[in-house]
Length: 154
Image (cartoon, rainbow, N blue to C red; front, side, top):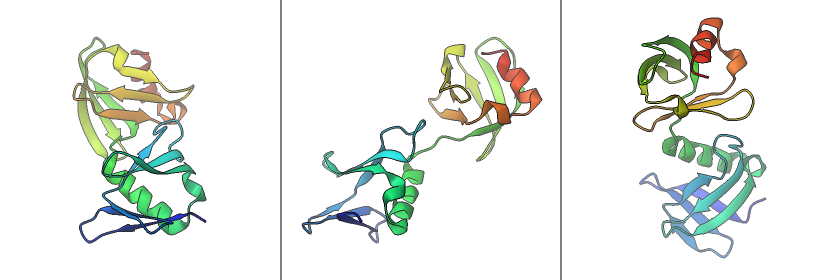
């Protein structure tokens, strides 16, 4: 059981009501570890920039509050997951990559090999020249062609 309530107002803003009855409108959820532990460590930050509540584990909240926070986070975060590499313009950077993501097919420019970062053993984050980050959640799940293209940059 939480000592606060969450709701969405008619303007689409997240509304936080504390146990003492104080209300904060325009609350923003912020993940402490958005890639490595997305459901662990979530801060609810008020419009003034101060933390209103800390949630150690998102799954400990009631289902209704989890849904509200997941929806709010989905609006704030944009990190498509690469599911397949369709092609690479060349093996020297900068190069144009054509990829299939969980949000559709796209192309982006990889400026430098340093823009590919390992996140643990089997996970990669790739930043394009515009600062958009793409996530490869499981290297082993990629098809052989995708892994072969990617190996040239790792």
